[in-house]
Length: 308
Image (cartoon, rainbow, N blue to C red; front, side, top):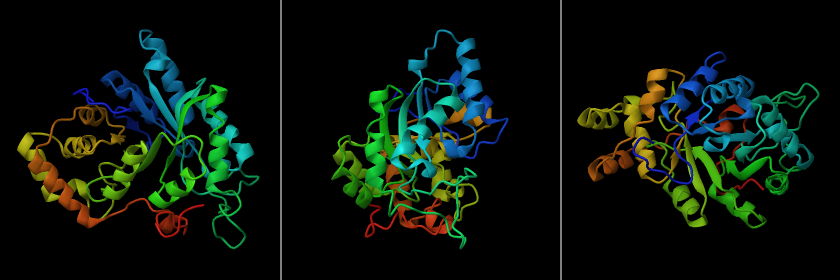
């Protein structure tokens, strides 16, 4: 961030839903603006374009080395079988034209049965999604993840979209504690219990969708409380929401392909206690905008039913 406030990870550029022929330029703009953390994933279907952009940017900026940029990617659901975990990693490395990743996350605690068409979301004959987590467990996938750092192809490993109960189950069997848990976090979904749990376990929380989600109702970026705080400080709504996340001790990965917004999002500021209290009050909305119960009919966030 522009104020130099850092955790184990600085604020990064998110690339989810970034359109083709736009995401590569967005990465270059972000790196030019001072970002040194990029959040990527195989399922975003844009890592090849980002790989080209990175190669061009490093060539144009020889004073910046690969080790100066923190790059995260994620293992997709169809690579969860232990023998396929390394294949998932190598697929991202090939597309990104990189020798290693700084952080590799299990994207969801959901294993999909891979099919011959290499579908990202394979289905069963009855039309349901091919969830095989009962056979390919969260623990089995994590054990394969634990072997990756020794290959030199990844520096650290972590998870994404893991609830407290799923983490509890994982930690009973883990040799390596996940370095990061990337989850949806914003004032409408602050998840204080998860924040405190991860803090106790030494797991860094990364907030995706920190500005809410486009098209969600109610719209966080249109909230009167958020807009009033932005007006009070002469800042953008996005800067308010990003600063709230940073002051909570989380890493943030706002996404944009608009150069002006990419630059603006990098400039956080200090919210006062009154601002933080008002933003924290918004948690009563309890709005989750990314829930596989809606799009896969698979419940991963029910704390009474951990993904095993």
